[in-house]
Each structure stands twice: as structure tokens, then as C-alpha cells.
Image 1 (cartoon, one colour):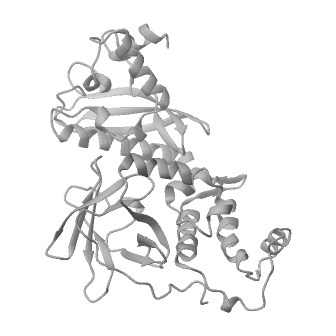
Image 2 (cartoon, helix red, strand yellow):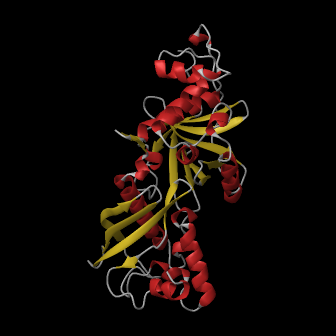
Image 3 (cartoon, helix red, strand yellow):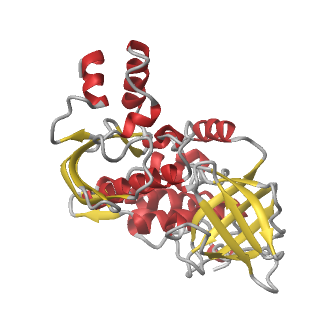
Length: 367
């Protein structure tokens, strides 16, 4: 049907220095090699590399980056990326093989802090009001829409706004109760703008990524498997931070990794005893590894979620020093804040902690 077809949109070439915001991070185009390979990074170390498709204006494909272990955004290498400019919008749309948009990245002139502020402003807008007029991103959908059923209604609201005549009885009944809904006679006559088209495809991708159980819809990241994946991602980021050099500390990581509680703890400890710790010691495990001078990869294994609610997680795991063969059992707690799991204790060792930063924290703030 014509309302699902991508319209003839104007596309342009990506340029060095351009910045794209995806709702989580700000990607900056660092270089374009051979005129066809676009390489961009974030200040937190994420990488994205695209290769221009010959003969296709504004079309690229995802290819492996220099150091990235896996394809970003839950996508796969080879998936298409469209650079679209239309009706005042300029963005990248990463597409699944079936054409659905799995991720959006909007061109911006703002810095990262300003982008985060704009994201917060967008998240003050109810999805029902925004879906027809604002280019959405996955961060917004994951933070604002709690269930698969809500996503389905939101996606169909775009069509209902244009008078789409639904075949599904539940959608007929639902939108039939909405005062503004006026079903038309010809669905094929409906024309959606590029924002509406993209949002429909993006919501479909989010629906596909949600898990559904008998008693209702449960987002993937609220499952034990999703939490374990989150923890693995965080420790991969820790390794990457330390690998960047001895001047790096865990606090060079994206702030999304730390809960509000952990930041409060860190500040209070420094206020009470400025010599008691440094940012480099916040990943203290013992005297042999996971300290400021870490130059060895540490793998998180055997992750087991012991306790899980919609706001709190407690997980046990094994940390393995892959260079020296040492291992350590640890406990990790996480809080669900702003639609993402954030670590609220970093590590609680299962053996003697008399010299650890965590004991000093307990001493000063009474945890």
C-alpha cells in the first residue's frame, strides 16, 4: 500500500565533522576514507563505520569498525543505512533486510549535553502526541512505552490519525472510542510523511525486540537474559576504558553506567576523606587486579540473576583475569533508572574487604 512505501526522498552525502544523535550517544564523523568509508565515534569509545553503496545516492551499509567486536544497535553487518533529508529533517535510518528501521540517528549541531537536554525535553512529550510529528528514537520508545501492546496501538495511531480503516476488530473498537478518529473509504489514498513512515518502521522493530509472556508484555531488558547482557556490555566497556591508557579511570565511562545512588556515594566518600580513594580505585577488587594500572582483560562469566524486580537487580558473577588466570566471585546490584539498568554498588567482594573502597564507603555513609 502506498502509505507504507518510502517516498522519493532527497538524500545527501555524509560529511566529516557532522554529528548524529541516536538518543543515547553523539556520534561524530571523524574521517571518510577513499571517499566511500565513513568512520564515526563517540567520546565514550563507540564506533560506527559505513560504506557507501555504489550508484545509490545517500545509501550506505554497515561494515566492521576498527576495534568494535560486534555490530552496534543490535543490527548486523551488511544492513542498509539511508541518509535522508526531507521536510526539514536530516537523519540516518538503519534498516533491517525487510526495510523496517531498527535505529535512527538525527543530524545535529548540538553538543552532547545539549542533545541530552533535548532528549529529556522530548521525553516530557507523551508518545500519543509526538508520534505523528517528532522523529522518534529507540531510547525514547524504551523509556516511554512499557509494553508490546502499547507499541502496537502507538504504531496504529499514526494511521488512525489519517483515517485508516482497520480490519482488526480490537483496533476498530479502540479507535472507535476516540473522538477525532474518522475512518475514510480508501486506505490506499493515505499519504504519510517521512517522519510518520520512519516512526512506524521503528516501532515495528521495537515490537519485534520485546518479549511477550502469558501474563503480559515484558521488555527484553527486564528479563534475566537482558540483565546479563547488560552486565556483559558494561564490563566490556570497562576493559575498553582501561585499554585506552593509564590516564583513564572508570569515571571516563558513559554516565549511563552509574546509578544516582552510586554517584552520591562517590561524592560523599570524597567529601569525607579526600585521600581515601581516587576515581581509579572505584573498580577495586583486590590488590592484584582490577585497579588503576589494569592492563589485562577481565571477563565477566557465570552471570546469574539472583533477584529481579522492575526496579532492582542483584546478580552474582565470576570475574576472570584472562592474563593471569585468577578469578573472583562478586555480587553486583543494579537500579532501573531512566529506562536503563545502572550499577549501584559496582563490586561487593565475597571475601575479605577490609582494605577495599567499599568498606570505606560503608564507614562514611553507613550503608
